Length: 605
Image 1: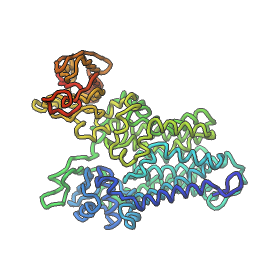
Image 2: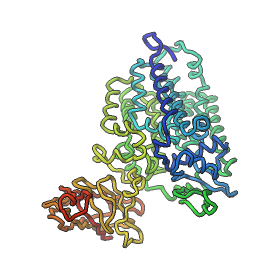
Image 3: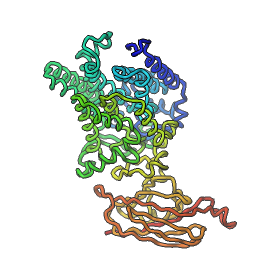
Image 4: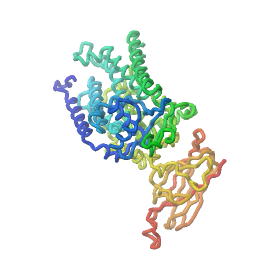
């Protein structure tokens, strides 16, 4: 790395290695199974087992040996693991193995901690590349501050701790874009004859584009929507009429992509690692006993006929664009504020052709997720914020052409303090409970992603997910509640639920048929003159109840927020006074803090 503008050895490099050695020390010595409470779920479970299979067996096949090895580190078993069976009867891991292939050497040497050791080297790569890019026109202290803010004043840094491809994909995309844009920015800010070493010579040559194209092939195999990454490189070369470079970039990309998909077809007899007979498994896993077979267990999770099953009408694209940036659980503005600021700086500063190409690529990437995964663009119910956005986030780093300032760095950290500081100071717990931060202000007042109800992070709480309101009289199509906070008591009574004290209980009522009216039969706690407020959508009603008095409120409603055959109604219920009967009535053994008990009555259209 070049010297800083003061002529002294670059202090940025020293700080980068300090950050790297700290992360490496943590990665080597943290008790990973303990901090995860011996429990991994879904993607983390499958990637842990898949990487071990590559590291120790050199294959992608799921066997009983893999299961025994997994239990050695994580006693809960690979809950939610994704597997697929092929015609030969063999069982393979049903996920892309790009991340596992690169992580496997570290896992073989360092065991479970090898994942984080691998991530430490990815972090080092991102820091070196990012500082080289910013260092072209920004002083050492500020460039380091911007880079660290981009990583650690957003949720991106939290995914360093996840045993999943998300941080790998982030780093891979970061490197791809850097290899393409570094030469463009250097020509803009430095004279043609500016001094540079071997690294600079490589980065300024066509070879850096070819390397970027090869990495783009890996990125697309890891996450197909990353196909947008190849566009700017090809279009840039076409605009400059560099026909040979255009052809070479396209050829390297196609060959790399073909190699990985071809290898998958050769090993598993199917090019699509998520296609065919694919299932997820919870509790009992194939091959753990002779009677535990792939056919007799699991939940079907194939990607076959995906578009027929999951595509939504075009009107939902506009909803999702708004939710994508400003939603309570996935909003870029709250969880990745540096991206939003980078977008603002792009339009406020000098706009160059490369910037417009990057903007088109990131816009295309966002639309791919929104259009093709309209009810799950954020990555699933156990996701913290929008994990798929990590594949797009690096593009925002290279987007602005104006110089950053200390004011902007301060603004980034102020936003992080308000919105994501609870996540950043406790990344493991926040990852295990991805909705914990969103159950309090300021998130409680943010827009709720009504298209994502089936994948809310609050659904990870089994007491809050798909709670049936009439368990003794089930409707043939079902009526369910999705609670959005902890302001309710676990369902003990047959047909109703107590709210918790004087707090607002918020939930989504989901039905599979339209309603004409929703009624609430209420029972007050022992407190006198207790005002009960119920809100359905934008309609609000109040009633004052005396101790243990019953009351009823009814709301005329329409279709609510309709998605295909599902009808969603947003409800809030609050008692002005809470009560713990055990302390107020000597004859009561009720120790719960009670608000108001409610039963729901539905009148179909």
